[in-house]
Amino acid sequence: MRPLLLALGLLAVFSTLSPAQGPPPALVRLGPVTSREVAENQAVEGVVYYERISRLSTEQPGLVREMAVREGDRVAAGGAIARLDTGLLDRDIAETGIRIDQAVTRIEQAQKDFDRIAELYAGKGISEKAHDDARFTLINRRQEQRILEEQLARLHLLRQRCDIRAPFAGVVLEKHVDVGDWVAQGRQIVTLAALDRIFVRVPVAETLLERIPLGARLPVTITASGTESFGTVEAVAPLADPQTRNVFLKLKISPDAPLAENQSATVHVPVSAPRQATILPRAALVRFQGADFVYTVEEGKAAIHPVRVVAWLGAEAAVTADGIEPGMDVVVEGNERLRPDQPVQVAGEGGR
Image 1 (spheres, rainbow, N blue to C red):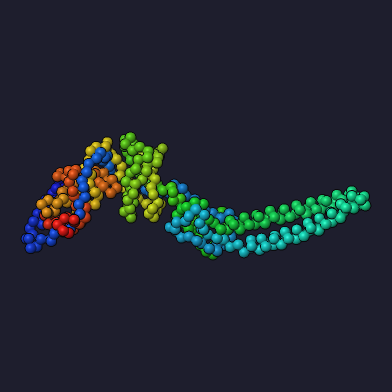
Image 2: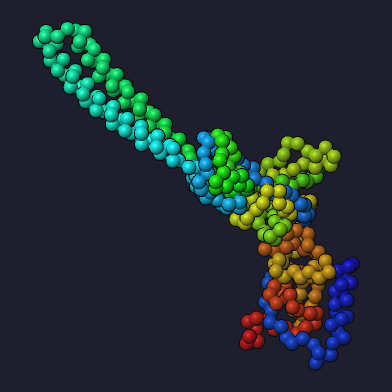
């Protein structure tokens, strides 16, 4: 009744204008009205959350030399997060390299000594003990080289771990240190959330679960930005609210728009069995004082019709309305400035 009264009020206001005062013909475009089976839905507020969150830490102490990200930044898998100072490690690496060179020289000397003693031993010119001592010396020199090479590899690994990188593609939720900070082993550097695991947690009455199968795609609107998309029902939480007996749907959503943990989102949840409904382009809807209307063109003039939206369907809406039937056309462009009974010109007709 309220939308009808509003429509009558609009007609009364604009009917008092004289032809000279009336607005000029408006150029509009039309869209078709169709019909199909849809379930009536209801807007329910949910909460955005990241399912996979990693609190990246450092494996060794050091001074933060570089921070490559800020809060809110998106990072590819393997992308740079932070870098610790490696001055001392670089010196240890250089020193170990020199020690390896020395070990190689000692091996060459031990090999020559062993070759000479082996020749003498073959001619029985030297004792077996002297021969064994030379052989063991050569073996020890080679083992010393392997130990140093392992130490060098370990130092390179520690240096590599001074470059903290993203283990997966994600967004930085929090940054806990900055350039110049000294961090101990295990100190948290950033909190990183995976971009491929973003969900909306939305409460629904337990009686509605039979109407919402796993895999169902439900319209989702991010409250802050107005971004609209669809979420896929991936799971139902195994724990219901003890007070309301509501259960919680888990809808996976796209990471196209920047999202914040605990941000609100509106989900349109089906509350009835599918039934035949009037479908029209969402662009046709005009909101006035909390009610929805659409315009049709009748005898070259704009005619206003109150409607009630029963389901949001992305770029379309399912409505109940008197005087709106499948096969008709409604105004989808130019309707935001229309007035009831205003002369209109449909784009593509009359030479315009």
